[in-house]
Length: 176
Image (cartoon, rainbow, N blue to C red):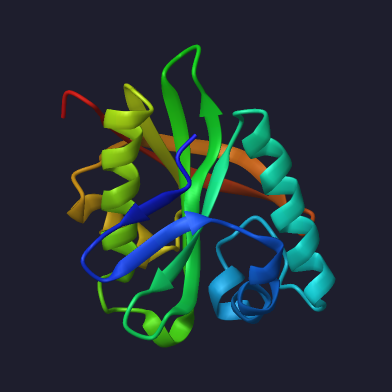
C-alpha cells in the first residue's frame, strides 16, 4: 500500500512512532478531540500506542493513517486517512484532524481531496464515507464543499463518555 501523497502544500505519509510527540500535542488538545471518538490524550505513550495500533491495522489492510506535514515548515499539523477499509465491498471510512493553529486555512480539505483521489484511483474504492457528530459544523461544511452526499442520521450510533451519540452519514461515490 502506498505510504506517501503530495498536494500543493502538504505531504501525507504513513504515520511513524517518531511522530508521537507532534501528534500528542494535537491529540491532547480538547478542541481538536472534541468530535473524535477518543478522549484527549494526557501522555505521549497514548499517541505511540495509537500509532502502533493504526500500523497493525494498516499491515492487515484494514486501515491506513497518514501524518499531515505542512511542507513549508516541515511540521506535522494533523492526521488523516481511512479508519476502516473494506476491499470486499470497495468502500472506506475517512477521518481527519488538524492542529488548532492551522484551522480555517484549507488544509483539511486539501488533505481529504488527496485521500479521495487516492481512494478512488489507487485503491479502486467505489464509496468513501464519513460519520460526523451533528454539532461538528466545520467538518460538515468541509464534506459539503467536497460534494459528499448527506445520507441520514445514524441514531445513537456510538457511545462516547457513557453517552450515546447520533452521527450524520455522508458519502461520496466514484461516480459522483
